[in-house]
Image (tube, rainbow, N blue to C red; front, side, top):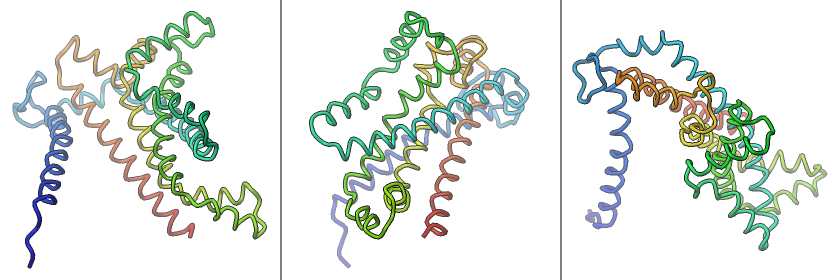
Length: 267
């Protein structure tokens, strides 16, 4: 048996280290949320569901959790539709205009969230359009942040897409919309699902933009956790983080299962 070359071993080591770096913060949050002590410390002073129950009975955190879910759901739907259409246009248009538009759409990823949030807040206030400190204004801010991730994932799937498949469907009598729905949409649906997951996770955990656009009556979960840690160093915020992690995992699993079901029953 031939020995493994050192390069795969290096890649494996890097992968393990990277995975550990991603999972260690999650483990710390979970253990901190299950802390039996009175303060947010690590390692925990024993394990208890005390702060989990405190989260489940807290009107502030439950309301913030619901608002985060609502804003993330609305933003994800809008970002998925706009991002998919933008990706289709950018990959099929080509030319300098498409390159300029692609850089424009990707700009929210490059810009610091604080700068983007401040810019949106100043625009809302100075324009007088009534979006400052409102749910609609907050959703718009989240769409601007999440849409580039949908565009990036869908564009990656469309780069190697063979448009002759659409032309074949058209030659068999399918309308342009039917050819897109039955051929293109099916092929890029995994990329759309991935973009949807990214958009939901990023919107649910968005803090910088929300800091400028939210109000005391419109607090998302990250804002509620920030306020709680600022004034009382209790593990309730970590317990809230546990439920945020659970929601993200459930959304990823549900989306993966949905894509698999589409492949099985959709042909």
